[in-house]
Image (cartoon, rainbow, N blue to C red; front, side, top):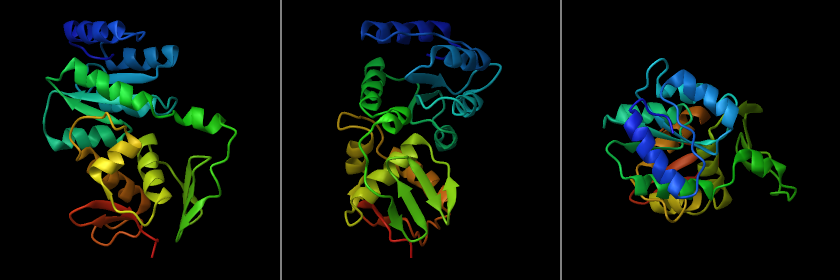
Length: 228
């Protein structure tokens, strides 16, 4: 739990501990990175506005050595804050003030998803790579290749693409994607899906007005494109 508001950090930490979690507190960005290296957490609850290094820089740094889930906290409601947090590898966000119960629900939903390191250690194959034009999706290896080049996706971006590509003829609503990627118990703003899709398209070089890989189905949501 990373927040420079020490009282809030202790309060949220106590909620998490009562729910059975082991909690480590940090109050600035540098301390957060050091603590993450030492603890190897499953989840980081990360405030955006931190001293020394802000939450965006912490998120970038943590993503170089950890695939833990990251929930970004922001006291600001501007959409740009949410976009920036998710673009550097956060999986979810909450705007202050928030309910500790909602935070717990989000964390439990995320932990029901396997970590990338866990998936890669599983012996059961996930079938051959899925091909959509120049895009290749290796589900077992959790790798994406576009025109033969590796594309670096965040865990959540990969999970969204995996869900869409598993049933390419299906038009997914936002709620269906949330159920598939986050969990049926996830609560919050369903437009979180749009933010991750926007980042996914950018990394795949997909023109939002004429996407090849992640297509918009007006009035419904998204479906996988054939790459043409």
